[in-house]
Image (cartoon, rainbow, N blue to C red; front, side, top):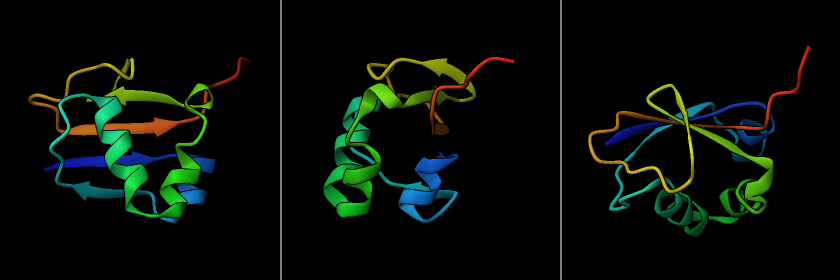
Length: 82
């Protein structure tokens, strides 16, 4: 089980700030595919990965980051400066 957190418009599209997820995925990309397959709101939220960033256990990561031993994955839009 891992905690999946959603921020900003990702949270708005999915309709919740976080959830506990049981996954068979070995990396973040696999987790995204599992989430997209759940229902349309997930497919919409993850339809454009170029508009998303991910953090694994609170460290910025790439979509190919492994999930072994991970407790938390967070999805959010890119942050802008200032």
